[in-house]
Amino acid sequence: MTGPVNGAINGAAAHPPPRRAAAPRPARAAARAAPKEAASGRRTPYPFSALVGQEEMRLALLAAAVDPGIGGVLVFGDRGTGKSTAVRALAALLPPMRAVRGCRYACDPADRAGCEDCRARRSRGALPTHSLPVPVIDLPLGATEDRVVGTLDLERALAAGVKSFEPGLLARAHRGFLYIDEVNLLEDHLVDLLLDVAASGENLVERDGLSIRHPARFVLVGSGNPEEGELRPQLLDRFGLSVEIRTPEVLADRVEVIRRRDAFEREPEGFAALWAEEEAATRQRIAEARGRIGAMATPVAILEAAARLCLALGTDGLRGELTLVRAARAVAALEGEAAVTLAHLRRVAPAALRHRLRRNPLDEAASTTRVERAMAEVLGA
Ligand SMILES: [Zn+2]
Image 1 (spheres, helix red, strand yellow):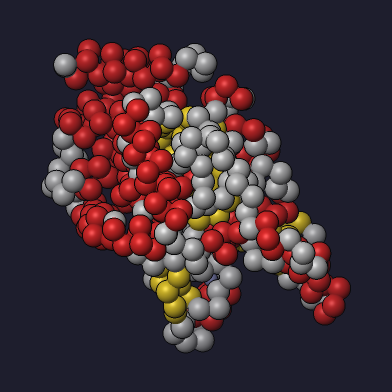
Image 2: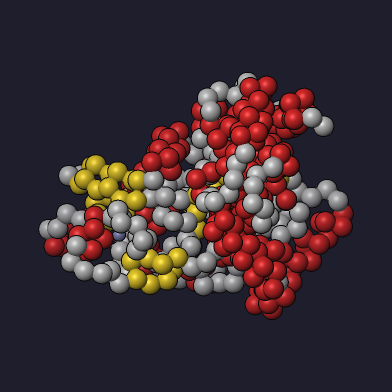
């Protein structure tokens, strides 16, 4: 597992030992200790604005934050290029969410549906609320299905004879981000399950005599290195956007990455303070974009351009067009525009389409080139 904020820059320390000093803890306490994302929530996150380069990834993450309906973001690239850092940095930028106090799923008080508990409580009166940071939950490769979807709370079952549900990672990721490093190595049945839940927004657990349904809406962020294992094409297609990141090859960029990371690690709060103004501006941009996107005009010409592009590329189904239009709209909203233009479409087309091309999966660069060529043909240079 990669440390959330100590995440490496260029591979050398891709897996820093998290708090090795805390080792001599009783086994039971350790097993029940707060998972790392809860613990790291209190640490200062690396500022999103201080990320160097990786424009495409940043734009894709911002777009997904503005419109979670875009679907997840898949980040292909070298290890230690700051993928996990970027997701955590983005979540820290999002305004805290109002949640029903006492709800295990952090239901949105404005959501009339909510979980079963909230529906029952609501019928008895107004629900108390509180503010929570947007969660970023790691799904480790070795996670069992129980841990992901939740399971029977055995302890309670044995001690009190009560059949109750112990929520899993999907419940904790509700309204936030679910991050899977090396998603291409995740077992197929888990990937299927995740994508189903991500699409339906609900986790349905029927096992051990339990029948539980709870809301589980999250932005799925998967990362992986295509050289280490392929994602099935039908799964690739379910991710909204796919971006590629590389270890910077320009000396000055590498130096800048190291300089910032080093400054951050030496003095996280001081470093964050230096970026506070830019962070506030980005936070404002996201909030305004979210407010603007509902009324954003999408001219028919844009829909046509998206459809022509997908026709030219021979993408299957209509998911490509839909994602392309949604992502272009989110980018337009982020830029404070009143309508989507071809320029917005062009900016997101490679991310929205490159993973939907009929395959040549080992040649990712070729996918990008194909999208660019199609754009030049269909939309003009
Ligand atoms: Zn609830």
